[in-house]
Amino acid sequence: MMSNWPEALSHLKKAAGTLAQVNPPVVKAFQALNQSLDQGTALDAKTRELIALAVAVTTRCEGCISSHAAAAQKLGASREEVAEALGTAIALNAGAAFVYSTKALEAYDQFGG
Image 1 (cartoon, rainbow, N blue to C red):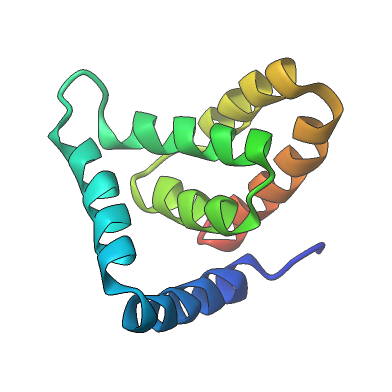
Image 2 (image 1 turned 135 degrees about the vertical axis):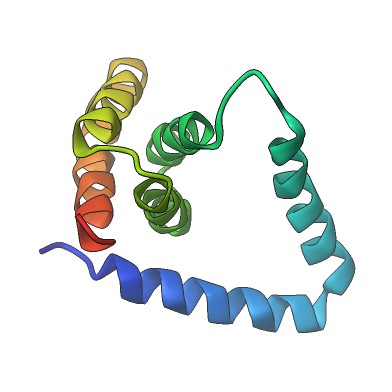
């Protein structure tokens, strides 16, 4: 195992709470931005999380990987759906996306599978 993704997500949530105490306006704005995605009707929540996970891989954001892998798992995304979404990231970002896709799939597996 390369990383403990549930632990990473727990740490991220604690760190986000600390940031929210120090800079509430920015954290509230970030949360509002994410909540605004729930207003969309063209894509369901699972599809949005699969896209977010693929984007997290291309941006190499480990906190994003942990968060979106957990959300995809919770929303019922299958391992095959995750792998297919990650394939898109790999096609767009080649080697770096390939390496981070292994991290994202590992994170997904650790959140329940």
